[in-house]
Length: 292
Ligand code: AMP
Image (cartoon, rainbow, N blue to C red; front, side):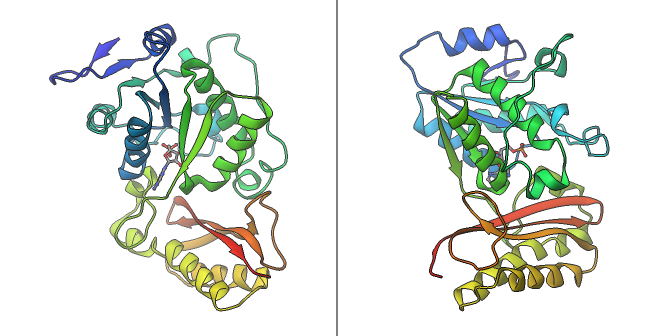
């Protein structure tokens, strides 16, 4: 266990599971919030950290680039790692403890348990990134068991992840509240993401097409459009006529089970994935209570 170097803080930083457990249970009367991350932190992550710090007696963030949720062709090796800066940001946000395990701590020799959520994992991101959510549910289950938080905080930015994890919590009776926090955006609407730093200046400008096409979709629906395919087509056209951008998928789905909608009504999730240059970006809008 080490304290953040060169500062006055009492931030606990450890890669060791028993040290994390010891600190978590030092006073069993205190409530704990958990913020799982892959590091390379930005204001989106920090909004989760601040909320966890505000709503609980103590709060723990985790920084772990989980290899089991990356496909061999994904960006695991080049995923940005900025640990010292991350620790300073978490400390400033009021976090008390940071768990920074290595892959060997999480997946020691002989490890062989998987956690598979059915149904909602097959669509959208799951369809285009096979195995991705199996890695997410595996690592999040372990983090829930290691930290045993009262509340766990996730971003609306990864909308399908929140749907999958709510099902995980319900199905496996994890004894915690899962709290979904709003997407934090740049001034021009681009959702903050650790992957935005891969974008060239030109790509960064073009990346606003995700937010723009979502805004247009929301406006179309507000103006009375109820045909799902028409909205999906508009998003596809908007993205694919933007230089450096290539649509991976556009979805207008039920917010409940993520099934694609022919007719739009009720609570919906509009989402898309776009390749901007070589960088894969996702974003979404959730709209409630649409009249048929
Ligand atoms: P990651 O480090 O990308 O795994 O993200 C860790 C957590 O931060 C996840 O719950 C994300 O949904 C959340 N997050 C990432 N980007 C944002 C954002 N722009 N606004 C709010 N939450 C975010």
